[in-house]
Each structure stands twice: as C-alpha cells, then as structure tokens.
Image (cartoon, rainbow, N blue to C red; front, side, top):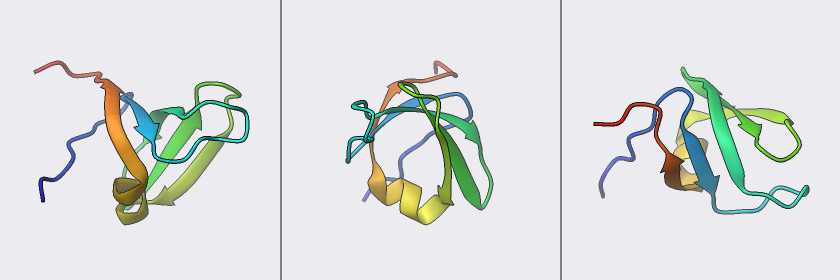
Length: 66
C-alpha cells in the first residue's frame, strides 16, 4: 500500500463528514499527532498520525505543488 503524502496547509478530504456538513479539512500542525481544522465551521481536532492516515480519503489542494 502506498503511503499518502501530505504536508502542512494541505486541504484534505476525510472519509466521514463533519457534523457541520463538510468533509474538507486543512492541516494546521504536524508531528506525532496531526491537528486539522474544518473548512466549514473552523473547529479544530488533534488526532494521532496513524489514525489520520487511515481516515484521510484524498488530498484536494496541496500546499506544495511538485
């Protein structure tokens, strides 16, 4: 299985929708844990990196275009 490459300030789509109705999130902190902020209601959540990698569906907008 290929590792998903994501970086700070990327906009990602998660598998499950947030209660506010959107599933677009911005990565605002990276480390052992990843903090993401909802693009709809600006709520932020910190989750372990491994859990984030499982729950992330795809990268919508990458901050660093290769």
